[in-house]
Length: 230
Image 1 (cartoon, helix red, strand yellow):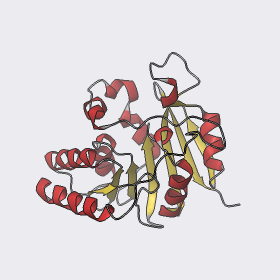
Image 2 (cartoon, helix red, strand yellow; image 1 turned 120 degrees about the vertical axis):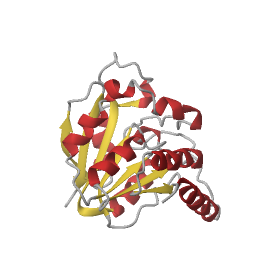
Image 3 (cartoon, one colour; image 1 turned 180 degrees about the vertical axis):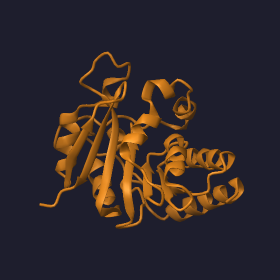
């Protein structure tokens, strides 16, 4: 699919989305389970920061994806995809027979993502315009959902988790990469970090179970959740 075709598709999605009222954050702006204050969403002005060269050594995205065991033919989602930094890497892992849903709240981010995919000749990424309450993923269709430094910015995390749980297949996985709040030396604002304790409490309240906590990255947790069976 050409860059122009992807951009036209994004505009069509945006027009369709205008029939919905954009939800506003709760007045208290804190999570009811942990009391964690929701962080402000990074705007399009941060797009260049998402693609900074030093991100390779700061976050080691290749190593993060390697441990997730993505395979050819898998259907995966990059929620909070931004400009597609992880989407393009996931697309190569799952191959042409697989698919990546790249979901983001901001249309300009998705437009840049579409251009990036066209430049890289990636054709198995579908941009998806999300809302604050819904990533707009197909039900019972996704093998793995990845959120990289995104979950802590949700204004409606409970609603988003319920939608993502519905999108996952029975054996699907939900993966969060979050800067470690437990480490004060990591140069990120405190509201943009999360502890394992916080993530576990918030996600288990919405029907997930922590399966693995992988500590191989320089600055981030890799937290892998599955659907709780009881």
